[in-house]
Length: 514
Image (cartoon, rainbow, N blue to C red):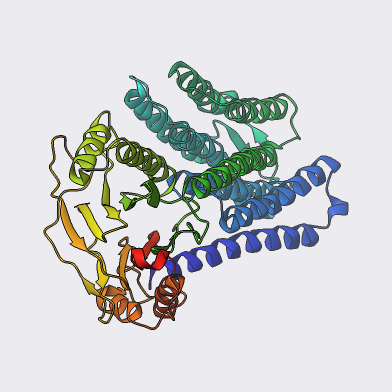
């Protein structure tokens, strides 16, 4: 049984649990005949059934919420909801069997179990709050032990009360009544709540407004309702009140999480637009220059990516172009990408005579204050348009592919240099090749050969070369379209895990300008 099947089974069993206790609760109420019950009993029983139904709603909301936090914290919260729901069921049964001498033993047993629920809920609340707020306190370890031993003592005292009647008794007529030490049964509950609040606030955790509201609601609401029950016998709404608080906790968290998600989506959308605008994306880029033609594209794996390409005329006879792949994905990679792109362009516009020196200076600048330890592979070339001489340098980037006019695409395999940003003082070797009219240069990031299908097989360089060698009918943009079509056909419905960026250059020669 895989993880998905186990999860589905757990959800099915949990749903069955809630449906069962709700159905039994309603059935027992009908069998008991509500007309024979006192109005306070009817109020309590109805509230407990409502509490169980509310618990089921909260559980369903948690498991189907795609934005919910799938963590140990959520599991503790769900366990809290389950415990309160079971406590509601026990309290309902206690009210239904009260006053029936034939069920005196069951009255005593159910009440014993019910009174064990309250300290359990208090202990679970502690287990939920501490990791939820990331509480760090120098006495946290000591408090953990005190909470645990206090919980064990509270459960033990309730178990002994079954035999001693310290907290409550059930007489021969089956009537429940409080014992002489009943008030002591609430000591752990109130002390634990107070201690939890003191630890959270004294740990100097920077609480957000909704977190403060959750703490106050959980601490005060059940305490007030519980106090009413202590001094007004016949009203027992602790479990329904706690379940309402659980619903409020979930609702408040959901509202603020959705608000934060909307803000994050707006910021991400803005970042996407900014990234789209800083990368040249209008083609043909130089319609008045017939000596060359170029086309490029970038498809991020997320809304924003770490890949980039760039090209610009340093003067009327020199075309500078680059392609790079930043480590990581998302916003951090996009920020590092924009910094790298700016540095490369500034250095190239300042002096494009030495391609290796450009990468050396960019590398040293990226290493300054690079606390995130990010890096970027890069390929930088400077084409002398009048002669076809291409001077280039690579910083750990993918091998370029070159096609001579009457030949096929082949990878130019040369020794790799380390990526930019890995360490200061790196040297990058400058190389050169002369392009002839009709030659095509293809640059790409690793998202192309490493695109994977549903069986995690890579697209690979061989498939890439096969797609590159397909006819393009003299249009350089068709080269890009052929590669994308081949990748899409290969990966099928598999998700894209990496940015896919490509740059293609067709050199027509100076005679094409005549």
